[in-house]
Amino acid sequence: MIIHTLGPQETDSNDAAHYYLSKSSDKKGQIILHNSYEEIISTFAKYKNEFFLIPTAFKSVTLNMTWGELHYHYLDQLILKNCFIHRLNPLVIIERCDRKNGIAYSHPATAQLLTSRIHSCQVRYSPSKYLAYQQYLKDGQYTLTNEKNIVLSSKEKIIARYEPQMIWSLYQIKG
Image (cartoon, rainbow, N blue to C red; front, side, top):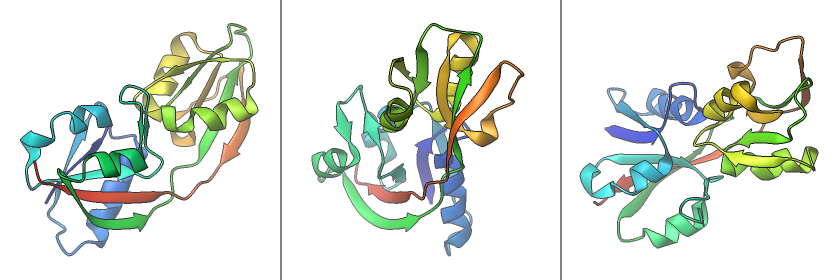
């Protein structure tokens, strides 16, 4: 079993893929990590009979699509094989207190959660929460990322912390 999902290794998607394989009878599966879900979606034809793991919270600004829209749009290319619940790593909203530029980094799926707490910010999208944190380190005032990704400095504070459950969808790719 080959599972394609979002990388890098620090992502919830990678954790979910490992969790799925640990509970599966096919424990010899291989996980292939990609730079974005859009990268996988645009190349389904290359991965015939392999698998695609995606959270139901999926949202793409590039494709202007949510998980539900993806599910119906690709009915001819994907077969839903399994769904499972797996907790996300705790999420945090961080502020860099010595920056006042209003720039906030987030994955598109978590941007609304971020802006529900930080009202006056300019959201810039990242392919993963891990990369949102990396971009925030360069020039951001705010980010929403996984708690495990961060190393707080004396100039930063955690504004909010969440421990959400997630539903994951495993599809077989028809190609």
